[in-house]
Length: 383
Ligand SMILES: [Zn+2]
Image 1 (cartoon, rainbow, N blue to C red):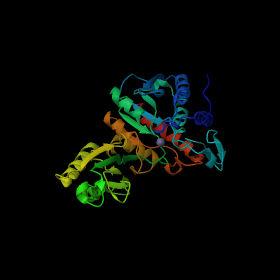
Image 2 (image 1 turned 90 degrees about the horizontal axis):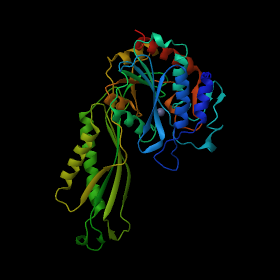
Image 3 (image 1 turned 45 degrees about the horizontal axis):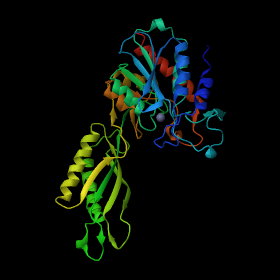
Image 4 (image 1 turned 90 degrees about the vertical axis):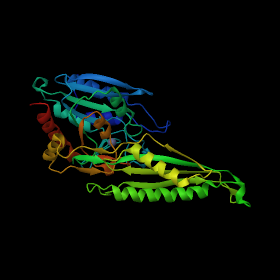
């Protein structure tokens, strides 16, 4: 089989719908995308392994290795899923890659179905016998929803490589930090009763008023304790995003629910901060009759940081000509960190175009991405 041109590879991946969503009506598998990549990589001499994902029979990760069989090489990684789209808001069919004004339009063109075709293009002429350290191409499932693909890798405990680049759209600027994400729900249960006599109930709404004050107090404290000047918003944030309680003005509210989102800095542990907040709220409620339950609305993403002096950070800085920074979105980076893989996020396209109608990749991002990938392979795989 001959491997298509880079443009054709991107077009074929865009043409395979692979939406992942926590909403089952929108959720799709990614095996068609994995299948194309596996064919092309096998054709280049990669040893191809397809790793199924528990809970999702129609989804898989692809691990493709070229060169020696060791765990001290370079991983180039991209996710194979996209977010859902509204085709009626697009100027063209989101699943037909369309060139216009020096841009390639299509769902996933920037985030991130172009990166792995560009990696394949970068290795097309590479002689596998020259590799002294393995090159691993990794394609993951479900990054946009559950991160179950990255979690499946962590569960195997296999390190796969010493260094990794995740080609999320950063306009080819290296990123070595992002915040963690926690989304939780606090439920307060009191006792409903007639409004005419406060002794007939215990108001969960009034209780929630105290809980919200306590949350904001706790937020002030962590914002004073934790700072990182590398971020545009240099402190942890906590947003109260949703509240619902009670039904009628003449009934004491028996039940109230609050949802919030926290963005924690590298060095802060999601679970430890949640436990700390819970203890603070319980202390505040004291011996009140109200019952408080805190639970997670999604699995969460830990904060991510790779040291500034890591060889992969320095290599990406030199090859891109940009200092490594921080972003406001989450990636699979912290999962790789759990496997002791030093990771940088750096890829073609702009995050502002991701998750939008008329998502596009600028054509002038293609060659610099190929050049940078070849530079990385030279440094980390050919000694
Ligand atoms: Zn992405």
